[in-house]
Length: 324
Image (cartoon, rainbow, N blue to C red; front, side, top):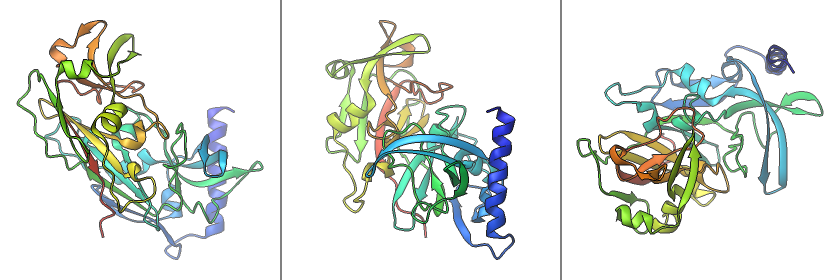
């Protein structure tokens, strides 16, 4: 279908759904937006659907088997951008040091890094969906999924599809690990919510199972970030979070100059986002040289802003529940 026709179909579906809900201040609040945004507040369905409607077909595995759905909604990135994401202008690419916490009424929570959903970087087109197509007709989401649901297109399983979404909160990572003033770092640490905190040098990295990836024509060799965190360091989950606890956790990679990037565990978990992030120690058969002993590499990103050179530390962190 031509792009303009897809837009028209999505807009028409949204209009029909909203017409059925009425308009004005009597509409129920369906979403609360909070945290580091210029315009926090309570959103009604017509507020969520104000942006350009996007229709998206997805497939994933759930407890009920393989699922295929077609959703209509507003991109999560657009919704947050329209609310005005607050950034610290003193920090380079500060948007990459932030995440959004998506929460349902039963307490289920999932984090998405802003770098993952930003079109300039990870470009994951997650929606805040308000309709789905059933037998060719656009209808409101079911009582068990809606009125709003976050999508995670491309995920293997549906754990990051937050049903009955009622709150979004934008936060800074909270990382306190400092840089070392720039320059080449011969080691980096893995700390935070891990069973075995460790400091690694080149020899230690090279002793781990190696992975090699072609990233925009450059051949990187290193170790899988997921393997490093989950197998080598051992991720320590919050015992109070019983359902998919890793989906509310994230890692913060810090460079020697203090540059920071958030990578959520859901993005790199093989059962969910399955992003092949890696800690590289060589490129095209040579050590990284001025890029340091180790570099975070995010294959598939549009730009290299999440490629943290001269790595000095990775902190694994747990997102707290929504702020009262």
